[in-house]
Figure 1: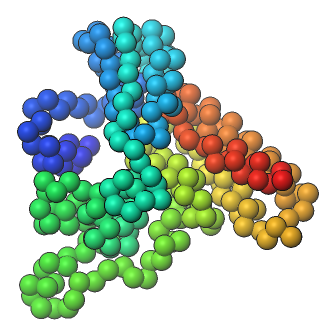
Figure 2: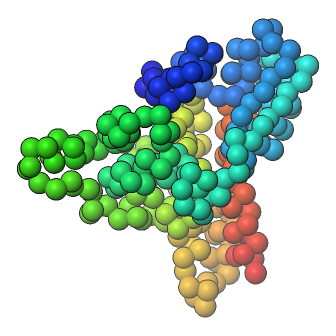
Figure 3: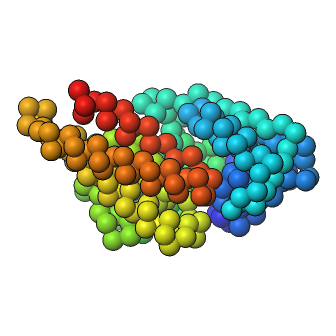
Length: 272
């Protein structure tokens, strides 16, 4: 939390006096609860692909008491931070998942695409190494190695794209998560962006089970079309339905609108 605030203030130094943060506030509903009574209008900034979800979530619980507490505003508005194309190169296609992947691979050029130019190269590299540390990886000290003439900059070339898009969580290693960007981004957010302390033990168990179910679903989708039988289709429908229910249940409890629409889309594909 302190690291995030530090970089936020460095990247937007002219606005740092207006930044407020509470380490205990981890979700939009908790933030709304914290601000309730202090302001009449709540404005949230979100990625273009999440605007409708957060607008629905925040308005649904406005004036209602729940596990997050309670809040009430005369008006709630959710604005887009800008259009995002997950398939695009550069800033418009950047995401937290892509930055973690770049950090995992030691790809500084890709990583810095998602960092404000208000930071110099030294600070950008420091940020990448702090992300690597959070992912239990060693730091890459390219600048020091160059200055001392020890060797050329070293990147983690042994970690391929698929490995960077698989996850290890609660004792389970995914196998097929890398085959679906939407699935990877969903669980990457859960595993690497949201603190485990945000969930109860039962919620963590539900999320682990949903991860396993989704991974199994994606494994089924990799079977050649000519080899897919009725049992495969039945298994996919069963696994995906259960995963959706688990994600929906946890999402409602903690106030996070998990995006699992890819499961519905794949259900249609499998049925055909």
